[in-house]
Image 1: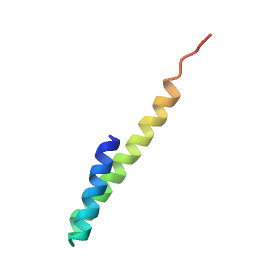
Image 2 (image 1 turned 45 degrees about the horizontal axis):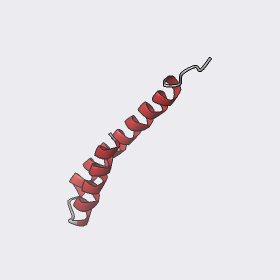
Image 3 (image 1 turned 180 degrees about the vertical axis):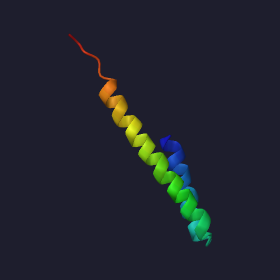
Length: 54
């Protein structure tokens, strides 16, 4: 999921350089949503993925 976030960020930067503001804003917002979903899933996996050794 982090890979898709990076792809959309790069797409937003390239679109902004070429002057496509709407596409750049859309790609940036998609990247932001994907990044926050990644963060939530990462934190949940850290919390619930711990195994008790004892």
